[in-house]
Image (cartoon, rainbow, N blue to C red; front, side):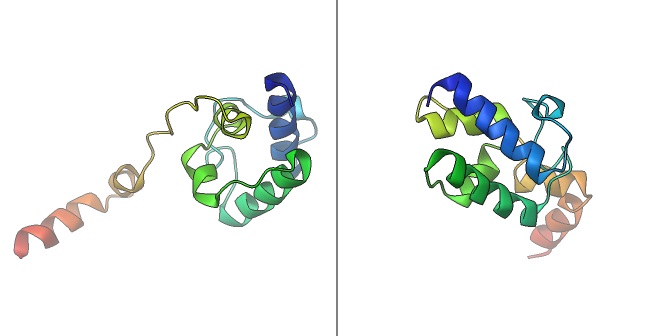
Length: 108
């Protein structure tokens, strides 16, 4: 598949999984979880992408490459964009958990 075909296939899979009316409604550079996805929907996306492209990728790669554009690049096998900066540390900070973890670590 060409890069454009992969981008369209990933966008269409996202639209289906996220219950969007059209693929054009799916943003190219928004994190899957921020676009309304969750872990169960990511499993469904993984299945859709396999059916559409015939490729198998690791679930962790879909988490790490969490935008349409990044997933299309991943499936294309080319140089993939940097994964989104929303790792566990950042999510913990956003949820107010980093202070608690720091306090526990300091108590040891």
